[in-house]
Amino acid sequence: MTQTTLELQSIFDRDVDLLVKAAIERSQNWLRRKNILESAQTIYATRSRISH
Image (cartoon, rainbow, N blue to C red; front, top):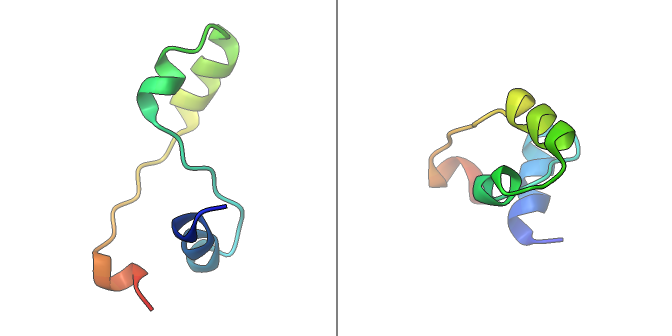
């Protein structure tokens, strides 16, 4: 698990998955691809918000 993943889990108090959108778009599993792309949420934060 990366440091970024751990920091995001701490901020949101829940498990998170970090994915590259292009990898999902290339997935041959159309049902999984559709579900992930329809439910994905983009979250913006400044670097100072994430740092300790």
